[in-house]
Image (spheres, rainbow, N blue to C red):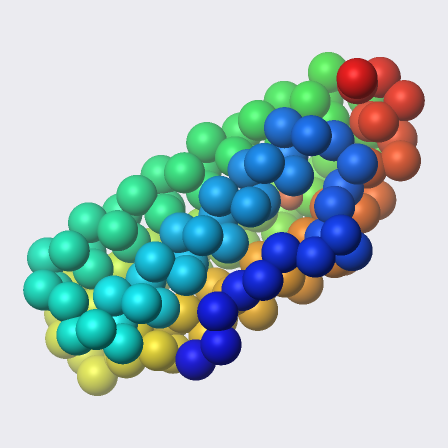
Length: 134
Ligand SMILES: [Fe+2]
């Protein structure tokens, strides 16, 4: 599986969120390496849990800033965040139940979701919020 490479087109124009997104890219890359290196399943499980918790922290930060400045795309954005979190929880359950889902499938989903979201909805708040930051 291809690792995620940060490019300028992913920038949302707000330094703290670009930094969060870069960290999320690297966390997914760590999982790709762990999978390829056939790391201990517990290492993979812990890294997945860190990714879930960092994602939650990042979503809360984005939503708080959009709310604070009255961005009118907030509800739609929250819906997309919640849909992702529901997917992550379901994947975690499926992995715990050994139902045949592969880490590769989970990582492909997470990587494409993160890129689509960063290039999609996240680009909408950028021009609005960057008027207030920096
Ligand atoms: Fe977002």
